[in-house]
Image (tube, rainbow, N blue to C red; front, side, top):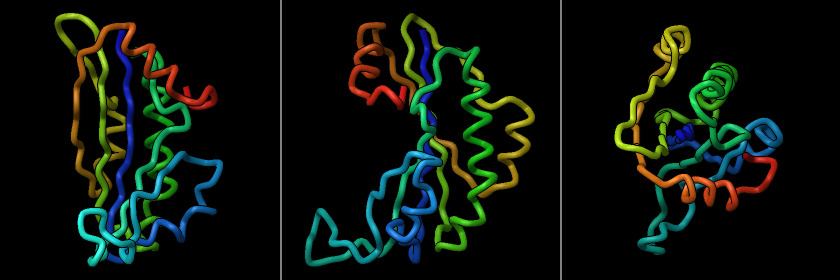
Length: 151
């Protein structure tokens, strides 16, 4: 069994995620990590100095490789639709995180087909990848912790 989780983390010195909440409501799941003028968690006398938000596919996880394509297509389409808008709101650094959860001895996978890679190459993106070996029971517990409409 394999699961995929894609997320897009967006940052910028002049990026205020609180200003985009109504734009993305009901379209993508996202969390506001912090705004440039928010007090820094590690030192409340200081502000962060940059904004950060993370976006997720509404399903959070893609299940097995046969459904990854649709999941990836949706995610790439969202990036195409909102990249310029995010830049207009002060974002200037984009990282598309890929998390793979698998069981077994070896983990082979293909992320993004040729068409999606071509589309993604138009954007200034980093592509960090994390791979986690888990039992099927542990993977199922990931789903139990998610709201039903996000699995």
